[in-house]
Image 1 (tube, rainbow, N blue to C red):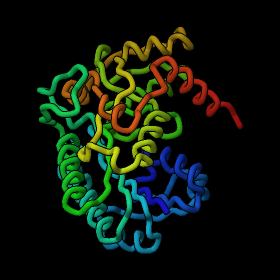
Image 2 (cartoon, protein in one colour):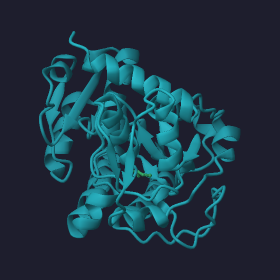
Image 3 (cartoon, helix red, strand yellow):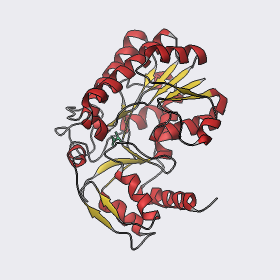
Length: 316
Ligand code: VAH
């Protein structure tokens, strides 16, 4: 059995769907602090209400299902954590400790925990950011992800827990909505284009950020989790990249399909977060160690996103 904690989030919804396709719905338990919005998710496999800060409840769920793999995705993302620093730290860190401890105690074979390019800070080299480099994150979220990476490595070394992690760039998909991220503009903009509306972007037009289409993120996650343990040479978290683009470039990519689509720019507090992050990532270690290779560039993503979002708008 696989347990996914935070199954209702942007990545969680997609990973639950993908894992249920691969392993059979009844073998993938979705857990989240709130019940799934659409009945479809609920019907498609076992669901458990779980607040990962409630350690007793976590252990109860894990004793009931005896998962061999746990995907711990529950967290506050960058913009939300910056507004709720105490809770952001508590959920991101205590939630991780509860999962790591319970996984050691109950003999979970593999644990997955997402990190982020947010672990890099303003004095990190911004172009082709290396796997090993200066890391002084200045956001609550980035600080919690950097600390979390180092705890994952500690649990691997001290307890032999096979915990694996990826430093995701901004993730973009059509099956779920993002929540509280700084890269969320790149999802919102497609919805506005398909709805025939304009988009007011909360980042400046030349803000370059590392980004990835959700199918690539799912492929990377499952490739990492299926790799033999001896191939996993990095136990903090792997750099992972696919493309980098700016609001100006994604707008031009969309205008290939929606010529009159208009974007205005109103940078808000998320601009400072974005400015502290890299513009591009060196993910050569992921490519060397376990064969990482992305499939989607900006235009291929745009073609696929607009196609599926238009289909979602058409009456069934
Ligand atoms: C965020 N989408 O914006 C997340 C991610 C790299 C960005 O960590 O907070």
